[in-house]
Length: 147
Image 1 (tube, rainbow, N blue to C red):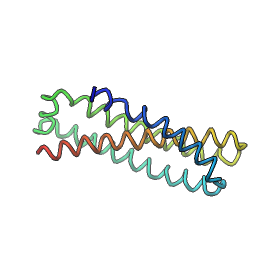
Image 2: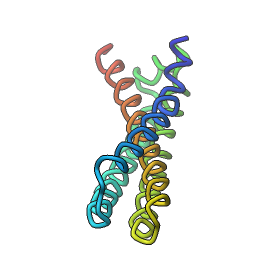
Image 3: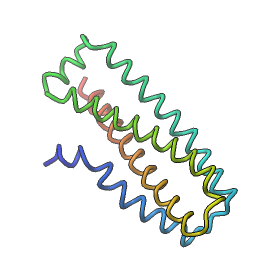
């Protein structure tokens, strides 16, 4: 059961959180176009940095294939899961960067309903990306604490 939750919680929790955040953001914040563009641009930068960081982490792990840490992960049978989670986080960070870029261009051109939908999609990508990254951090924290 723990493995199933671990595998699916970024999407399972990220989508409802994103929809709620997008709805509340449209309903109560009343973002101006300039504010929205600033938020999208900031998250574009952050998500691109995170994707690069995670890509570097994957490269480092691949370089350590004969090290005890990776051998332990193989023995425990979670080696592939760790790489899958890293790739998931990279993909969603990259997706967030792409959606942020599109949002910068599209937000001012849309009517209020279109802006609300775009913000909801962007918030979903944001939450899934953040939760995927947190999952990787928690796994590496466990690995570091075991050594």
